[in-house]
Length: 541
Image (cartoon, rainbow, N blue to C red; front, side, top):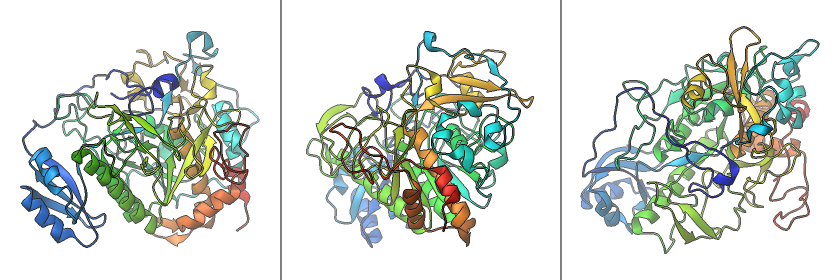
């Protein structure tokens, strides 16, 4: 199972985000289908060239199995690498990839020492909330420095958001039964676009054994915890349980595209964006990237024909999906990534391809190579701040790439309290052995809140994955206030949402370091500024 275990490891590991901890075995007996000599592919065709692409597939010895005209690709089977090579250079084909491209969530787990454990580590927390109101009265509110930084603790008494706003969480799933998410979880609209993969066709473990016979988890399950944390930051309700999110009155729709292990396949990510657009989701949070390529280049000389086709397919497919969602009124928000890298001046990629494992190599790259979806058109990308309001050391940056900044934690090491606290699925914590047999936390990363009687769990995480949902929550507030009646509840043009997000952000100048370019109104570290929920809740139309 892919897990994120700390910043130092994160900057040195393939995938660019964090190290991969050993898989935790899951219960169940289902296994992946046996490998065959025929592979499945996504073949993206050039504009208006579907028929020509079908003919090219047939000439290459393959079979077209289906089409997705919304995004312009064909599902096909073909004889492996020979099929890809035969399609290379065909003018009807924009890109080809096997349906096994894997990505990674953009979070890092806290790995402080025992000496740094706070006094409450490993104990149930039952704080005194007498005399407090609104979000400030939530039992764990004092631990939410992030909400105070952006004024969310005051904003939600004025503009908590409306249930007419649908927020799509494209991630590893959402624990829809969590006491601090269930009131705002839209189970009817939630979907799971992935099937668990115990082992891949090369025999490498991906997700471990399946939890259910079909290997397809229900749409209210998160066996990783990343998606639940993101959803909780956006919209945990004010209900006397745990914490409150940035927009505690909006609805969460789980649109799962990530495996239990935290990996992302290309096609489920395309499916998730298309579905979000078709059902009237107002804003989506994308705290992940698609790869095995951290940077997707179109014609890198050090890459094979197959590898170039893979990267072209990722670029073509993701941008078409982003275009489709944007045109349907979906505001697109993404994490900027945790490589501590200037995305405007990349020179070397040592992390790709990170799948199959052990395939990484060093290759030269330039600014024409893209990290997706963060560098896609129409995407609002968010860098991470530490508790002092500085760019977090791990956060990516770039004058062209950073649009906004928001709290993401300092990367761990000194204290868990400098990370972001949000809801965690009990099943994932037990699988990671972070709870003992009685349900007590075994690590300072985890907090148990039993204030209302029934216990719920929360965990500290760091990363641009944690920064992005703060911006998504602020966007949800703006859409709640200024959206007009439309499909799904209310609708608001994504361009107008972006304009208000930027207008209500608090500008922040570069520190005195050479790496940060730009002025106070926009720069590579903070974009157009730090998101501000209170301004979003009070700005005049």
